[in-house]
Length: 214
Ligand code: B12
Image (cartoon, rainbow, N blue to C red; front, side, top):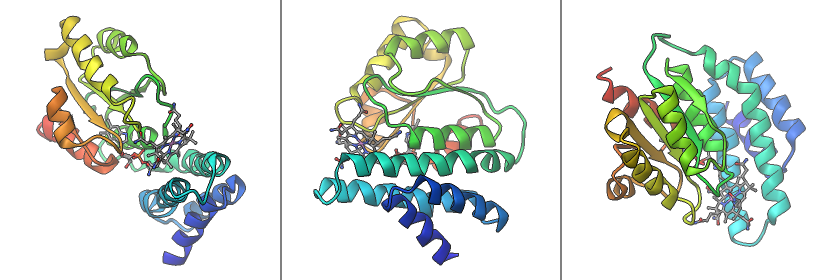
């Protein structure tokens, strides 16, 4: 399997959407653990692309192609991840989105998929979600969790602003706020008054379930 994961990793480094799709399909036929294929193959690849970009070896087009390769593989594997759905009992309603000014959606989509797979009812608001939309949707949908992703240090402040707006709308006490994304941390969550923080999608499920006493 290690060799196979290497190929997934390489497909992202090469920015090959076709190869990534082919490998994702092959992993289903081979009945490999889809989460392992995502995390240790494709996601590992995009993280490496990010490093190469940071050091100036890769440029924006390579970054975009790498991200497209991961997203294509994810769309093939998403139904399989959802099938893992262990207990389909309703674990609570969630809205999730990437905050205003931020279009990174790979991590957010993995978190949304994993929460769905574990029985949460998930409404994905997408990317670049205006602060007031989080509040409006939370109110309309009477959600248990508001989950916000941020990948940029310049946009993470919007997580704090949404929390303030939830309080102004007098619904802050009715729900839990969970934040995540690479620049965020447990400390950041505490600082802005978020209830929950998780470093990755598996942790996000654990943390959300623990609140419900599951
Ligand atoms: C792919 C990528 C892009 C793609 C995004 C494509 C897409 N559809 O998502 C593109 C090319 C579009 C892009 C654009 C930009 N990017 Co970019 N990008 C990345 C890169 C390489 C990978 C991000 C990623 O997908 N990681 C893989 C996923 C699985 O990990 P993740 O997002 O962290 O998610 C996990 C956890 O964080 C957590 N999580 C995530 N969300 C949530 C939410 C909740 C509620 C919870 C609980 C957990 C959780 O769980 C996830 C799964 O385990 C990162 C580098 C990096 N190492 O992060 C840079 C990076 C984030 N980008 C960066 C920058 C600067 C930009 C641009 C400004 C570049 C530019 N000059 O235009 C633009 C910004 C555009 C915008 N307005 O948003 C910087 C940010 C620097 C900073 N400190 O702010 C980074 C860190 C690169 C770098 N090292 O400089 N980028």
